[in-house]
Length: 504
Ligand SMILES: Cc1cc2nc3c(=O)[nH]c(=O)nc-3n(C[C@H](O)[C@H](O)[C@H](O)COP(=O)(O)OP(=O)(O)OC[C@H]3O[C@@H](n4cnc5c(N)ncnc54)[C@H](O)[C@@H]3O)c2cc1C
Image (tube, rainbow, N blue to C red):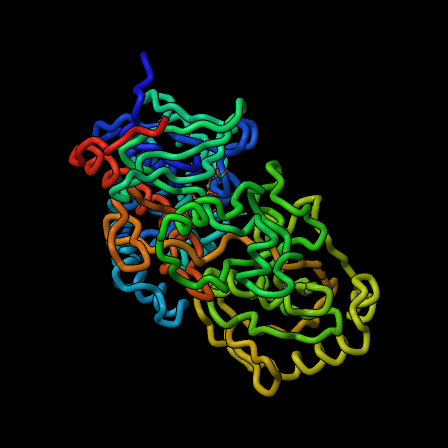
C-alpha cells in the first residue's frame, strides 16, 4: 500500500483516547496515522498502567448483559449491579468537582458514556465485571457499589493491547519513537499537520486534521511545580514518563485556550518506596485504596483526613494531595485484624512497604511514627467511635464524635491485634488543566473561535475535573471524547478544501 502523502487525520499519542480516536476516524473512512513518542516496548501511555476500570451510565443488568454477553446465567444471577443512570453519573461528577465541571462537557461525557462502551464492544473490546475491587459478597450475591462496575479484560494492559490489536486489524499505522513537537498551520489558520522528531530526526507530516491525545503534564516536574505548586516536583508519577504536556504546549503555541483546573490533579496514596515512574509489571498495585476501613496518620501520628467521607472512588483522587502536604510527604494507613479481609488485592503484593505489630507502640516504632502521638491519636479515635452497624457496601453512617477530622462512615476502633501499617506517599496520576474543546471535541482559541483542523481528547482536555474526580471517569472521558474527536476530525477532513500550501 502506498502511503498517502497527506493523511486525513493524524493522531498524537497512543493511549486510550488516541487509539479510540484513530478507530473512530478510520470507521468514518479517513486515512489515519498515529504518532507515539514512546518506543513500542513502552507503548500504551497511562492507559497501560490503569486498572482498566471504566465508569459509565447504565440502566441495570440488561445493559451489563449487552456489554458482556459472555456472562453465564449463574454469574448474572450473582450480580447486584443496581443501576447507574445518567443523572447519578452527572450528579456524582458535579458533587465531587463542587459544581465546577463544565456542564456541556459533563453532559457529553455522561450522555455518551454508554454509547461509547457499546461501540467499543462492537469494535471488539471485551469487558468483565469488577468482581474483586468494586463488589462485596453479601450472602450469595456480589453487591457492586460506587457507580463503577466493569473493567476491560486484562485491566489496563488488556485495554491497551486490545486497542492496539483493533488498530492492527484495520491496518492503521502507528509510528513509534515519533514525538510531535509543533503544529503546522496554513495562512488561514488551519492546522495542516505536525512537525515530528522521529528516529531519523525532524520532519513534517501533512494532514487535513490533527487530534491531540498526548496526555497531561504529570510527568513534567517543571510544569508540575509551575502549575500545581511548590512540592509537586517531588511527587512520584504513577504512570508513563512520556506525558510531559507536549500536546497542551503545542496547542497553546498556536493560540488554543487554556481551560480547567490548571492547579489541580488526580493524585493518590502510593507506596512510599515505589519507583519515580510507573512500573510496567506492578502497574497500579502500588496504590493503597482500602483506607476507608482504617485510619491514616502522618509521621507525627496525627490524622489529617476523614477516611470515611465517602466511598473511596470519590475521595482517593484528592487525598494524594493531602499526603503531599504532610511532613516528608509521608503517611501511614493503619488497620486492625477486624478488616484485613476487606483489603484490596494491592495490599498483598510482595513489593509493599508495611509493618505488622501486636501493639500500637510497636507499630509506631516499626514505621518510625512518633510513638506518643500515635498512641494518643488511636486512643482518642477509639473513644470517639459511635455505635452502629458496619457495612462496607454502603455509606453506613457509623461515625466518630469528638475527634478532628471526624470519620463519617465505617468507623471501627483499632483494638484487635495484629495491627497493620502501610507507608504511602503522593503518587500523581494525571493533571486536570488543559485545552478547551466544544461538543465535537474541536479545540477553541482564546477568542472562543474554533481552530480549524484541531481536535483534542483524553487527559489534555480541561474543564471536566476540578479538585477531585469520580473513579473510572478518565478512561470513560478518553473513550467518549476520543470517539467524538476522531469522528469530527474525519468528517471535517472530508469537508474542508485543500490547505493553501502543503508543508515541505
Ligand atoms: C496507575 C494508574 C491507574 C489508573 N487507573 C484508572 C482506572 O482504573 N480507570 C480510569 O478511568 N482511569 C485510570 N487512570 C487514569 C487514566 O490512565 C487516564 O485517565 C487515561 O488513561 C488517559 O488516557 P489518554 O489517552 O488521555 O492518555 P495516555 O494513555 O497517557 O496516552 C497519552 C500518550 O501520548 C503519548 N505522547 C505524549 N507526548 C507525545 C508527543 N509529543 N508525541 C507523540 N506522543 C506523545 C504518550 O507516550 C502516551 O502514549 C489511571 C492512571 C494511572 C497512572
